[in-house]
Image (cartoon, rainbow, N blue to C red; front, side, top):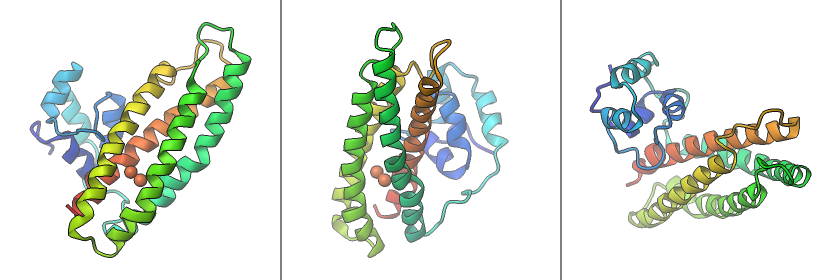
Length: 214
Ligand SMILES: [Fe+2]
Ligand SMILES: [Fe+2]
């Protein structure tokens, strides 16, 4: 039974599937996450008891996430780092095409390709720091100074969250306009998946992996 005083962060960690519920209700779980369930419900104008019931229907436990840091790190790299790097260039290609073909339309997502290029660029640097510096330190069992790279990564995750907010703005919440072509629809679907994957990725690092070392 989930308490109304439990924090969003704790619920996201303890209930697999809770992040999908939070995403649906636009409750931030990967950034701050420190609000209690009742505070978050109040902020979003939702019924706290309905939200609580929805979360209680989810099975308890950690889901399929590996419990040990080594397994968790390999999971993060293969399920998130590699997937973002494979999918972002394709989204960027589609965005360039949509912006070129539909540039005269009022609802054309002007600036989307440049924004995806920025996300790709910054994420590449961020993930490189994790894979070359932070994760190897963790695999060696951690050290007192590990709090510095962790603090840096947390700050960069805040920037990524802001970039995702801008992505949602540019794509009117990942909703293509009436009558949009297949490329346009596919592009927005890729952006929606990127948003989902990146938020889940940062949640696992912020709330599950990093706390094992600080
Ligand atoms: Fe990462
Ligand atoms: Fe990260």
